[in-house]
Image (cartoon, rainbow, N blue to C red; front, side, top):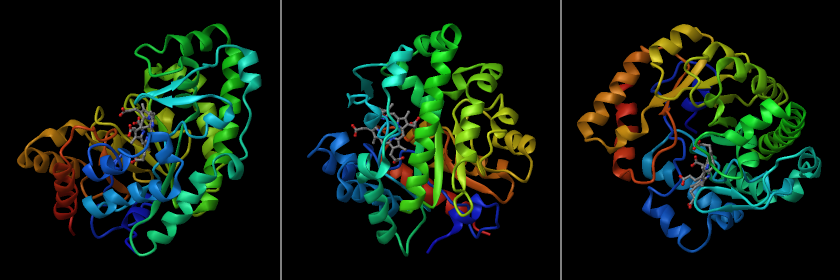
Length: 340
Ligand code: CP3
């Protein structure tokens, strides 16, 4: 079993820097497209054998040091009572806009309502036994609320911000309910075999640091502190967190995920040696030549300067138009250039 990813999450010394890629199972892989051409994205998420199959693809093809469950952050929101579609971005037919809408949302029973997620994890632990650790994941309460209130992706997030400022009681009730759901969902993933949990707060960085502290931090803190973390490290990835790392850090968590807008050296200096970090190559570097990819991998490793508690990753998900060979080359560079 390759444990360098788990060891790095706990801040231990490793033989080489562990590496995986956010969204590493997906459309840039022809092998994924072959499976995906026979069903919809949601059908793929809900069929454990297929979800497990595409989870394993990047482990074998890229040589990454971790597998991440194939699913979506919005999977557990559907059984709260919200009809979900992907076109390919997520769309909710009935967005949450009022207290009555929040009251109608139910907290799913995980074994009954998302059995396919838990079954996929169980299959994966068996399949991965001698390979790499398994990451489970969920959306942070704020990012889930963004999709539930906007009904889809957004440029300005006017609906959720309007709710925050004009109906704070509705906003708070919604965030409480999502947080409660997320605690149960992620603890169910841990019980089913997830060895690390990553929390994706893709939209946390659209708020000012003061609003992040007021409207997001309390819920992310409650979520992280309620997880069964004794043997399961938590990676907290807040995109756009570079200007408020001290605040985001207060949420707890063992590893801070970083996007590419912050220098890794500056982030490590401000967070100190006790906090492990993950990141932070600009995903578009993978459009570059091998010379560029190698130069940029080397730069990120140099910024880390050999400090323990470092996991190499992109600063956000891999893009669907990236050549798979470039991703494979990036992984090889990380291992070769970080060898001790
Ligand atoms: O990392 C992995 O390989 C695991 C799978 C995974 C998916 N979504 C599969 C997916 C993970 C970890 C996610 C997380 C997710 N989903 C986030 C947080 C990470 C991030 O990228 O910010 C968010 C915001 C979502 C919501 C979501 N799902 C969006 C915005 C989209 C469309 C995006 C796009 O690239 O078009 C999805 C669809 C989705 N989720 C796909 C995949 C492989 C593409 C679906 C398809 O095959 O058609």
